[in-house]
Amino acid sequence: MSDDYLTVIPTDPWWQPAEEAAERAAAVVAALLPDRDGGGEQEVTWHDTVEVVTCGQNLERIRCPGCGADLSMRWWGREVTLRQEEGFTTLGTAPPCCGVETSLNDLVYDWPCGFARFEIDVLCPERGPLSARELARVAEALGHPVRQILSRF
Ligand SMILES: [Zn+2]
Image (cartoon, rainbow, N blue to C red; front, side, top):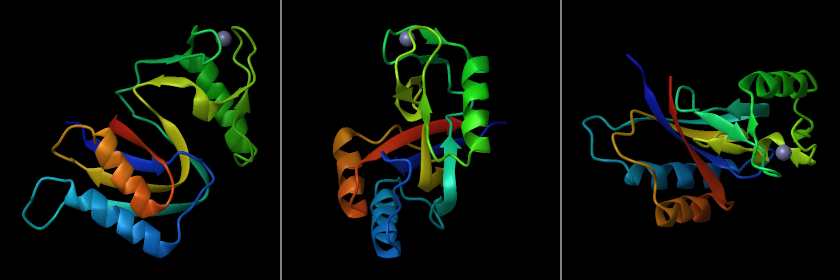
């Protein structure tokens, strides 16, 4: 058995909302979920340092934003570990394919992944991805653009 999650994070990995804005955004997300007895299992989390938000088993490939080459999971894992050891003060990276200066946050993840110090997680959302319009509503409540991660673990 695996669990599906719908996670919403700010597009800026270091950005954190005030508590009020976080509550507003969480309420918007909750209202977009199907009605369930006892409410969905939703969690709002602040992290002291940036954390990797992966899509788990949904991660099929990672590509370079510069030249489009496939990046190996091994290279990616090593880069993430290195930045993690530095406390994620930077996400800067240069893929081996073309050496373009980019960020681990800006690699082309299929499905999307991200990095964040704040996240709204829904366990078993029982619905498909949020539409662009729905994401815009969450972003407006949060006061910052957002990215959604659909993960399976
Ligand atoms: Zn490249």
